[in-house]
Length: 355
Image 1 (tube, rainbow, N blue to C red):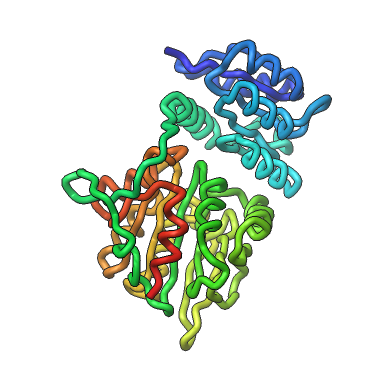
Image 2 (cartoon, rainbow, N blue to C red; image 1 turned 90 degrees about the vertical axis):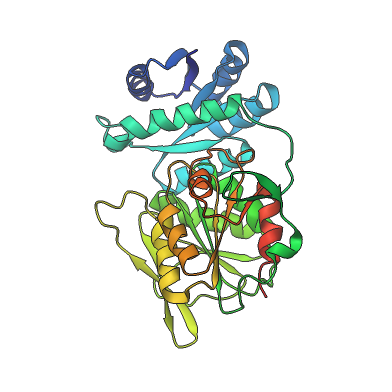
């Protein structure tokens, strides 16, 4: 069965670019197009697509308002297509809050290459995963579970989460597709007086991470900032690694400091969860907790191996609450995790993890 797609964009060029890109994959069927948000709502409810690609800025009704109405009237998996600007980032984050599942950057500067060379592979792959996730979404809330090597699942007790990181250690969180919404849920479960720093590697373009950090900071009790090169890490603060860069941690005396690093051409995830975790192992050994949230691919698995080898701890989000069960599945299937937790349980569990 093909995946029915509704394309929503006021630009004839971008609609054509999407038709050409998606149409090359016979797993998709483009069942309609809309030129503004109001048109999108009508066609979404009439045509009942499996997936919608949604522009942000459109006449008559913008993409954010359209997402809100669609999620009220006929909930559908929605991929936002956003420009790489601060305004585009803020609008996209608002659309994710409204119910969109993911976003993808489109180029307004190079009209001949609307989605970049990587987009020809990545965008269809992510659309397929979102559509599959929407079809099999589980609405029930599952109890916290522990992953063990024989793949059976047994309950995790609250006591198992206590006392695994010292007050000199750190918590590190990695996420990708579905991560912006998931991170807000996690951080909302952590109190303002949390006694260690938190590092976050979220796959996100450079223009997005500062607005994302500011948005989180307004909605959670702890302080959330985009990490700056050379900044001292403080307890009760979550540091979002800037998009397009890598983040590492060094120790100077008793204090920990954040260091930005330019990526190498072969390092495709920017920021990289692997590089963040490997840096923390070099600096802190096993005095840390790594948490792998929803995301496409396996970024974080190599770093998790090093964390576990040093005596540190790795948790993962469960499949039922992940938008894309790629990154958490990779560490779980490799036998690297001590706990597999539903999203809503992760923040409170982190709050109990420091001794």
